[in-house]
Length: 173
Image 1: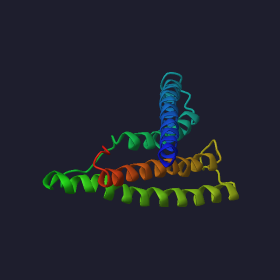
Image 2: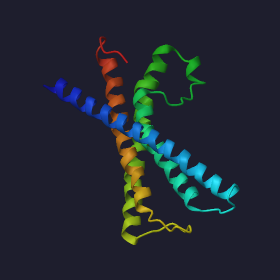
Image 3: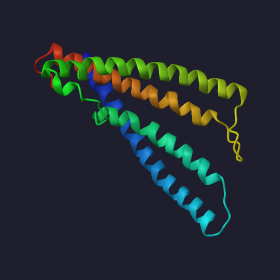
Image 4: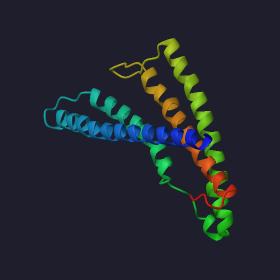
């Protein structure tokens, strides 16, 4: 019963992270077109327009945020392993399976919590950017707690898998 619930949660989390990374890819393609439009407007038609820069920056931020949980899911993120190479294999596995997820869980939890506070404050005061477009900042800021909330669940999943690897010899990374 518990195993099937865990598999269901794992499957749901995997689907959500995959959907988010597909959205991130779409945002990257859209950012390419928006930036190209801005460059053509500025340098070929001599009519600079500020919207492409603003939209491109937002898409860059959101593209990163939407993809970060998927990268963590696949464990393809950058690791600072210069010191781990000199450690015994058992210590390195412990650091990667237990210590790193605990630190990441702490970081992501705080970022989600504080990001939510900042986004809600932005919504409360009706904060707008200081650019020419003056877009509302709440939709931009709310993506930080949403995406790092997903990342928190992915890190928690990785921590559970790391603990299971130590508690069960048949459990593999």
